[in-house]
Structures are given as C-alpha cells and as structure tokens.
Length: 130
Image (cartoon, rainbow, N blue to C red; front, side, top):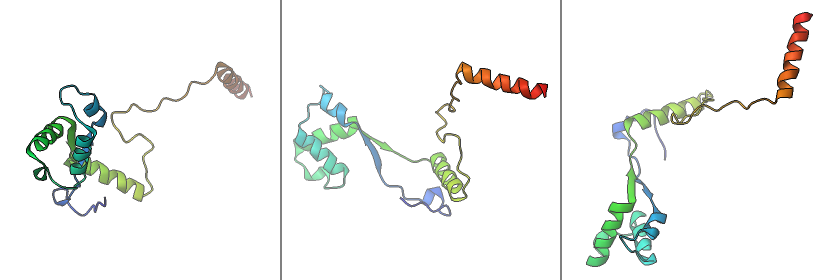
C-alpha cells in the first residue's frame, strides 16, 4: 500500500482488510462447516466470485460464517495520521526509540547483578576520594 501525505484521509482508498478467525470456525459447534465451505468462504474473501453465485443453502451458510467469523478492519482518521507521522519520522531519520504502540508499557531496564552494583559503588567512592 502506498500513502501520499499530500492526499487527505477522506480521499485515500484503503484496501479491504479483514480478520478471519479460522481456528474458531473449525471448533464452533453452532455452525458445522466442511473444508469445502471454509474454502468457499476464503475464496469469496479473496475476491474469487461472489455469494450470489452460490446455491441457496450454501449462500445462507456462507452469509452466517461471514457474520460470525469475519471482522473487517477500518483505518480511521486518527490511525491514518499516526501512520503518516511514523513514516515521516523514518523519512527524516528521527525514528522514535519508544514503542509506537501506546498500549505497551515502556521497556524495563534489566536489573544489574549485585556484584556489578558493588563494583560501581566502589569505583564511585574511589573517584570521590581522589
């Protein structure tokens, strides 16, 4: 996908992105599916045909699967501006050292072993005495 920072969010054509919980489809007892039905669902999501080309029973089952297991992901204005900002920071060699995901805590510095702490304190004392 190519993003042009001069194109406003409202005029950007984002591709259709979806999340398919494939494992759950196989384990769900409410809607029994065959491998063929899962293949048909995947083919439709990839753009190989439409639901209207299916027979009535298969079409109804595929519609249920789409409603239950497929979640479409939309890029909102806020996410778009975060992407553009991050790309600009890479372009300008100002990549952020902090994580870009605000839900992640900052990385914790590793704890130093006691012998290292003791050596650093001894070195500090030596520098203070001199």
